Image (cartoon, rainbow, N blue to C red):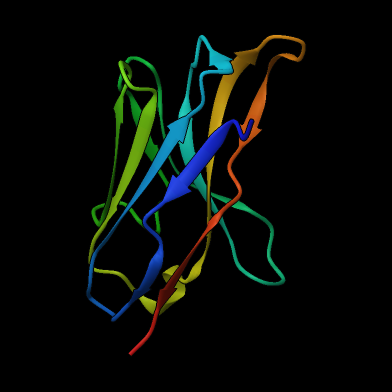
Length: 120
């Protein structure tokens, strides 16, 4: 069972908006922080935004004011509302969760990634 499933990526014009969603499977418990990371070819994966179970948020300086992370603890979902998108936001976006899984213990879990492309 895939622990995290992302949706919502796609192609958008500069200045446009996209909303990414990520749902944690029933195999994950005691989810602490959830977040979004991204990777472009030739670069390391970088933090985009993270939100704790209590709702505290952290953003990369490059997306602050344009992206908003939110979370529904009752559904174990996390969302990333992206606005004023720029070509440099083009990347594969990955959902992340700090959670517990039976047989694996507490660990970082990752989704399969969803492509976001910003181009005219």
